[in-house]
Length: 608
Image 1 (spheres, rainbow, N blue to C red):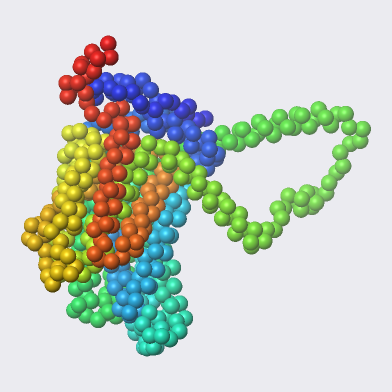
Image 2 (spheres, rainbow, N blue to C red):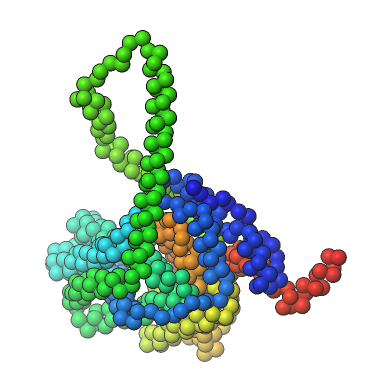
């Protein structure tokens, strides 16, 4: 059984009360999409049924639009252990993300090609395979603890193996010599050495495993478990999401500083050994703590039981359907057999068994069939995801990843080559932006409580777009010409404009990130393939992240960085417009309250 698709919300209304009444009189956008998804998906996942899907979708829409409600209480011990596990996971991933390019630059001297290839290949893997990673979480939804532990263990194994290969390159004298000059050895014009490049290829392959296992942990814990633990309470969900995001922000700031401290005070090989030891030690604690979290939050086991029950009911229904079909075919066959002049031939049992054996496929056939199935599944998931209203919100958050106006490698390279800012000053400005981002994780829960998730997203995007204009203006105004002897010296007002705009925009950025995360969690909460669809957002984000590197490839000169920044600002503006006029208007039925502006009565008289 499937849900019938209903009309979407299009009517303009003047206030929250009238809009809620109007929206409840119609089917919500998500409700019809669940039914359509089951029609297209076949027997991939059990259907929750029309009444469950439509009522839960309406409830999710209410939670997205209205201010946050519900209790905020959580099991303190379990929440602390969940936070520690996330600190360990995030710290390990961010440390590797920062350390790998440093090691590659140190080993493959004279070129940035290995670091660029590594970044491109791993990002491409995340774009192509994040959806499949989410599908695994849906497939094993009845064994949530085992699935998350498998992703945690896989991530640690990939990280440990990568550190082991880096250690081999640093300690083996022949491999280290062959890695010099971009893998050509002591002679810059020599041939590429296959041994050092072979180790690099293995590190890149393991890096793909690292990023995909990180997607699995993020989807499984931050999106699936957190939503279940919240038990439908918007306040609980916002609290858990804020904790996770604050940990991510602090790890993103402190773990690179930790790696830099190790590389400057010790050798590279010692740094690799320390990171390898931390990775091995944290594996034990993460696997242990995540088990305690699972046992203390009983909602996780209860959700597994509900999914198992739905699967059993779906299997029974499918069995009855097949049985009815077989009975009908048997009755038709019996009617025809009565007119036969001769009795049916008796076939030996051995021949019957042989006839039932499928033909043995060749390896190319197996690979081709597997690729075809993967492509069809990916196409189906993208088609389903793109038809949901939440897809527009996901596009908006992904567009923000196209920005070069953040403290990543491209922006840092611009600051080092075009300005005279010291490393200490740049580190201080980066810390100020992280503090501003933490403020965004405080602002978002306050706004959600007052005005609801959808309007919080709108306000947050404006809070990012407007201050960011100051930073973009600072890249064009007050910059000395390159022919000037002091062209790297910036006026104080220009410096203040640049970093003030960047810092203030972080408040809106992280506030919107939190709001959008809660939106996608609530919108897909009852979807039978919610983790597959939520993982597709990682694919979108990595796609636009790849685009942001494309901007700096097109404008590769440091003096042209301002043009890449202008395009990035345009991407933020586009995200704001898509969100307000595409997603927010569709969910709320309007963009602004005409009655609060005193225009509703005036427009009504004009129509009369």
